[in-house]
Image (cartoon, rainbow, N blue to C red; front, side, top):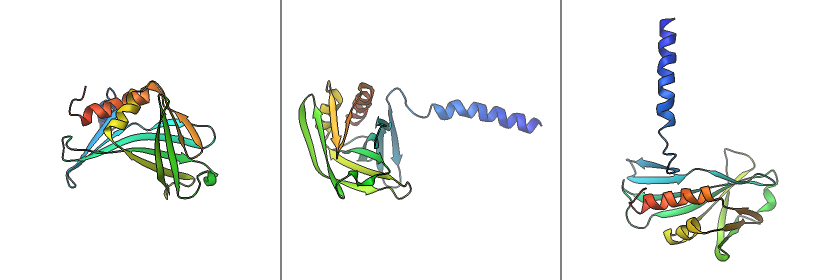
Length: 172
């Protein structure tokens, strides 16, 4: 019985430590892979819409080494859940963002089925830090992935700013 109490106390003490491992103030997660000598930086995954095809987005970046250096690869990563997978036209689609009314167009965005999850497809579009900064600091960002429209919320843009701050080597 004493062992059970000791395990419960240890479990209770471990929960706050586990919960604090994510930096919620900056809204990003940084993971270093020492075997590949690569760092992965990701924002939280956000639901962009839940009616019709469900659409989620996260922004991720990767760079060599432990510290940001050079031009990282930055990607907008979408996940689409729909019973009607035909709503994408073929194996590529387009992504159009209206950033304060100015168009940023991504042609030939590849669509992939997620094998582990039926009715889920993913799409990723690469962009540079300057374009991500335009998105992160805009007053309004509206988008269309294939036929699905969405709007970014201010908290999503704040996470993008946190990601950019990290990549610049000056996290706040």
